[in-house]
Structures are given as structure tokens and as C-alpha cells.
Length: 635
Image 1 (spheres, rainbow, N blue to C red):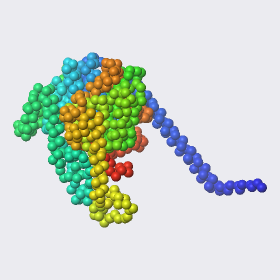
Image 2 (image 1 turned 90 degrees about the vertical axis):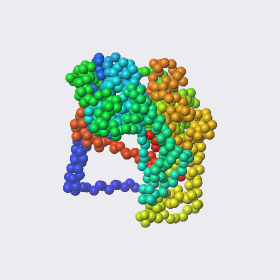
Image 3 (image 1 turned 180 degrees about the vertical axis):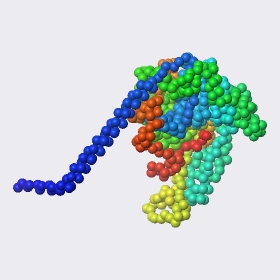
């Protein structure tokens, strides 16, 4: 029998009116929002097209001065995508600025050979170096530029001793009369938290390690640096410092002894100069004269070509403009065989990590991409890392081994720092290159477990309960650490150290006992590491690239090309980077409060990076203790 569906109840006229009114308002709202959205999209498109048309590469003129004035932190690899970098620059955010080492080197090398570049104005007081190995590569490139017969004039307002290493390469070094430049030496000081953690907060930190020189976690368990830590640090730091003095003395026509004497008598010397640091630098022959920026620019106008349209008053091109000029020469259809460069910069952690950190999965994926790409014939792994998690380091090492097994040579080029886990991922390379001032070694393992029952007692909280075995809940940090559990953890760390030294011994073809003698967590300079068989050659990235190409039998330098394998930016990021990086786009974003607010809401905020040890302690992935191969070394 069929059934008739009941009729829907009829709305009252009042309800029907308001429902209809709501539908009209909802339609209107969507229409307005869509119009605004497509209007903004169209506006972005028009401005971008105009900017792209007006921001093309202009031809360079004869007798141009190359103004090399890098600003920001010197890095191997950008840590932000193009859109974020361009927007930060457009909004004047100096804290986010970075300069890639590779860009500096290629710009200096190209300018040296460029017939339209007459000289260089060097400004490095806004550059933030991260170590001496990368600085020495830039200094070497500047020395080649100068040796080619092209003049370098350096000017600074206030120069640190790291910045001065680059400025000193110039034919003439000028300092602002109100500026400063003082050599002071190398120091490395850290804060120690044992009393604060243990006595004030009631946190007991249990350290398990192998190697009396493995000092990375000492601040959590000591009140001051151990004797072994001070001994090891002073040993490699003296080596780096003496090399810095020698590098400066060579170009400034003096001696390391004279420079050292100037530091020893610093109070007397500055007093004799009437407290005038610029005058003192001149007296010490660290600079050639005291001039203001305007006076230096007038000097370059006289020597170069005056240009009223230039901000400097003389015909010039800056680093950004010159890099754009060089990029315009790149042939996208270049089919030559490739030497791939994979950058491993930053802390080594598990999983997929952004640039600026090394991920067990993400960095392995880049190496695997090089292995699977038939156009890649050899790989250079550029390492600038203090290390990190053992498992993530092992994942990357396995990919290096897999590349070699696939018949592709792997050469490691160490940057400022390749210690602990940074050495772990390097050791299986066919050849290891380092600068004499690279910081490396620190072959050792440690683990940390904090327990907080005394902390909880301070607020009247206690932990109690039952377990089915003596070790159930034994790794709960709210309970005191059972000595038997401590024994287990130390055994795990011992095994990790044996794995580390065993793999190094196998890779370096040396007895384990010989590796252990130079390991035990001790840090070495690159020169010291070579003496101990941990490094093969003392040279920079160019030498490593040439070695990799030679091993792959690629012929002369013009027979192959170098390609960096990195994470690709999204199309939107590339679009926004190009838009914000253009002159019109940057000006529009800078002057438009509406655009600033719109983009601030649409872009995700940068998450603050947690301190490495804290992150490792809190994320053990179910393991009772996370083995760490990390080095708090460097400056």
C-alpha cells in the first residue's frame, strides 16, 4: 500500500521574509568578497607585470664600480623561501636578511673577469659571519680579484675582527673618523645551569656519555667548564687565532707578533690615542686612513665615472643587481653533465626539515635525487653542521654510501663547522676537504635525562603507583632515576660510541684504537684534523668540486656544470618573491598599510626554534634515551 508523504509545514509570512532577507544578504556577501578577491588578484597581476617589465636586467656600462656590501648572516643556504625573504626586505626587516656564501663567491669571481668592472668598493660592516672557514673562502676570492690588477677600496664605520679579515684584503682600507676597529682575540664562554636547575628548581639532569672531551651537555650538570673542555677548546682556538693573525699580517704588511703585541698593550695604546678607537686603528696600521662615507664616495667619483643618477655619485652596481645580471646569462637548456651540490647546514634532526636544518628524511631525499638523476655524475656534500641525532645522521650516511655504490663519487666540503653528527655524515665520502680553520671532530655520543620529582615536591606534588615489572614506568621523568636504569642508558651510549668510532675506522681505513685516540669527543681545527687523519685535504669548495668532477672523469671545468639540489619553492612563493623583489612591488608593499596587513594575515608566522637539547629530551620517539652526536662548538 502506498503512502503519501506529509506536506512540509508552511512558513509564516514573517519567517519567510527574514529567511528571504538572509538569502539575499548571504548572496550579496559572497558577491562582494568574490569581487574583492578577484580585484586584488587582478591588481597583483597588473603590478607584477609592470614590475617585471620595468625590472629587467639593464646592460652594464664600461668602468663600473662593483659595490660589494652584503647585509645579513652569511649562510650556505637560505633558511626562508623567496617570498618571505622578499617581503622581509620590502618591509625593512633587517633581522631576517641572509647572504649565501656561494653568491658572494660567484659574484667576486665573475667581477674579477668582467671587463666592465673597473674596481670594487667593499663594505662589510653589515655582514654577520658565522665562522672563519667561510670567511677565508671569501678572503681568498677577494685576494684573486686584487691580484688580477683591479683595485679594492674598503670602507667601514665599525668593523668587528671577523669583518676586518675581509676588509683587510683591500688595497686601501678606510674607517670613519668616529668608527672603531679592534682586534681582541677569540673567546668562547657559555652559561652553566647546574645550580639553577638542581638547587633552585630541583631538576636533576642525568648525563650519559663517552669521551672526557664531550662537553656539549656540561652546562646542565656542572657549574663551570671542565678541565678537559678548556684544554681542548684552547688548543683548537689558538690554532684558528694564529691563522687569523697570519692572514691579516700578510695583507697588511706586518707580522703576527706585532698584531699580538698591539692586543697585549690595548689599554695603553687606546689611552695614548685619547680613547679614539679610529685613531688607534690608524696608529696600529690596521687601516690606511680615516674618511667619511662621503669622502670615500668622492674619491671613487674621481677615480671612476660620475653618475648623477646613482645613489653613490659614481657609476656602480650592487651585489643584488650584479647577481641578477649574472643570472641572466644562465642557459636553462644546458645539457652538460652535472656535479650536484647538496647542502647540509644546521642541526641534524629526524624527519623532514626546512632549509637551515638537516633532516634525516629530507636531506636523504636530496641525496637520493642526485643518485637517481642520470645527469648527475658526482656529488659534493657541503657540510656546515654541529651534528644532532644519531639516527638521523646514520640515515644520511647510508645515502652517501648508496651514492658511492651506484658509481657516483661523493666528496665532502666542510664549511665553518662539521663536528660530531656533522662528521658522521661526512666520513664515508671518497675525499674530505676542510679549511684549516674549519671546526670538526667531536666524535662522541651523549644522552640526557632530566628528572623532576624534587621540582614537583616544591609545589606539593608527588608521583606514586604500581607496575607489573621493576622497569615499568622507570623512564618517567617525574620519578627518581633508578641506578639500574642509569646502567642501561650508559650501555646504550657506549654502544653508540662504538658504532661511531667503528664506522669512522672503516671509512678512514684505520684501526679503531687509532680513531679512539683522536675521538673521545675532542674538537679539532681543520688543520689539526688533517694531521690526525680525519680530513684528507685543506681547501675550499672549488677544490672539492674539481676533485668530484675528476673522479667522475668529466674533463675540464667548462665540460660540466654545477647544480645545487635543494627543495623547490612553491609556484606561489616564487611569484610573490618575484613581485616583492621588484622595485615597484617593493615600493607598493612598503607604502601600503593595507597590503602589509593583508599579507601579515595570510602568511604563517615563523615558529621559534626550540633549543636543540630541549627538543631532543622531549622527543625521544618512544626510546628510553635519544643518542646525540652534537657539538656546542664554534663562536
